[in-house]
Length: 271
Image (cartoon, rainbow, N blue to C red; front, side, top):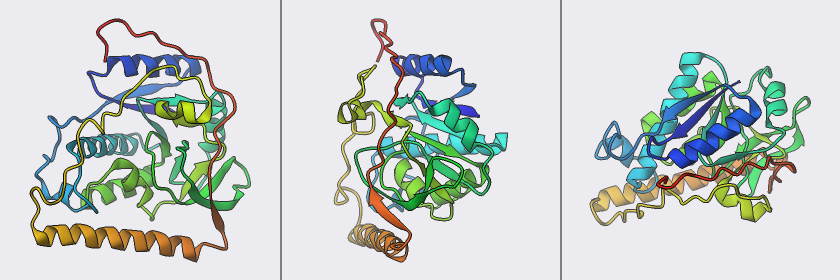
């Protein structure tokens, strides 16, 4: 399975770390140059970025646009791809998992990560793979497999109302989504939470920009529209879980047990 790595051209330390992981596992991979606020297209003032449930940081817009580039690449390749952000730490069992999961039918998306928050998943595992049906996720877009149909559905969601990349993925309910159990990827900032050695220190690029308050540039009507969309989304999530209460549960997905020891000392001057 081909791997697509989303990475800013300036983030050379992160890319060196990801390249080391690719070499360790022997993965075939491609670089997806991340969109930045300066290269965002459509630009930040385009209406598509202002139809979400709250005002977006420009960095959130850029990350969403970066994932959209990856989804477009999945459609070009017409094959499932593993999509990674450049702070994803991969477990030792990932290659075997990918071989097992790639040929399975009727799957559009598999989340590979866990992030210290419960997910609403099926009680029972898939009959032939270590995955559970994922009914509701809330956070995390660092590591997932997208099949062409799933990529197409996520693109449609994002083109209707651009939002945070993880929220776009988790709110695309038209997909058949699954969760790897145990999780085979964690973001580097979650290493301490799960007792995994952290090979590289990172800082959030999204949080480098403060959340914009709605009162700054939005009319009262636009602020009400944000609140209405937020309430409707929460109601939809609640109803979705209620209707599947007999099929699933909210649970923490445990991470895999074995992780490679990859320590990549960056040269001076890297990010």
